[in-house]
Length: 250
Length: 254
Image (cartoon, rainbow over all chains, first blue to last red; front, side, top):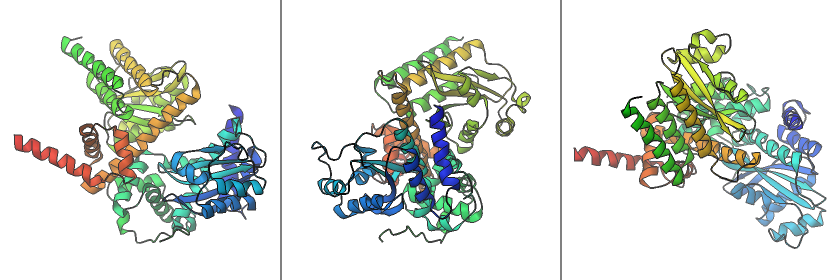
């Protein structure tokens, strides 16, 4: 129990005050390699069922694997955003018949196991934390729990990806990552997210990203902005800020 | 106990048992259960709080869908009788909130501002694990009768059983998974309420009524309708139209 709490704290710390020359997404991926029984990690944004690009990674091979998915149009990450976590513990096994093209290329690079954990934003899967290991074998115990926790944290850099303003604003960015996540898991934030969805005609993840971006820009908490929206003092319809979804096709 | 009230209590348990036997949507069922609490007991508001995998409490169901009311329950994520009850697994009864400002400064201030004077938290236990707590607010000071506390505790037990429907769910992981599913469906319901509130110029109570009416009339689980709406597989306007038609029919019949 204690070691899980420690693991949770370590992952949070990697996001909060790791190497400042790296993005938070990169730091989280490196923390996965340091703390879990995996050799590489990458965070990808997947909208409308297809890959929109990789936004954080621990190494070149991780990026390459995500690139394969994009090229072949198949792979664990695409399955994970649709169906939930994917665990391919031994891709060299003849019984592993999913994604034949991708597996051929991955084996060629010495990869033995592929895992993909969906990243949940505002109750929808919008991205994945992809993990690989050279040696085949399942993701067990603390590595599994830690992977799931890292996928929770990965929601934060993805939120920033979806709404470019949030990246520019600095207010609240020095908040610990776990606290930032908790600040979004609130009744008024859920309700306001729904209202913004209707105001802007966007999905839940983008609505939440816009709400958060507005909060950062005004130096407010997500809860404060949510209350203003729920009480109809604020409508994001009036917001003419443009979102730049980072490489998302028009 | 008056026979009228006795009959009402029986009716509440029968209705819960029927819903469970029919495999009703858990958030819907537990919203009904909190409404039963508010009606059958001498209290103003009832809410169910459930812990997630990190031990953080979330509002799963409440007798009122107003955001402000839900917020008072939600506040106990940081401090309050529910949090204490969840940690100790024991009932926490406070007959006069104003005496407890030192114990829970933020919670007491907010609850008092909302007009509450007494609060009770009853543990939701299942096979040795505390899943969350049933929270009752009174708008006058004073103790709940022992019978009423027993009744509330029985309803809390029923809530636990309804949440973990899988008989085989004895291991912690399966239980956690079921709780997480319930919490996740609550998120979609809140988002759906927001969409309906915005499009239909409704308050959150009315938005919930629209959602619930559509689900019931289509024999679909509440959380599934909410999920389909927020993923835009089901148009929110369809729910609003359905609700409007119903009202129109009722007015005509008058």
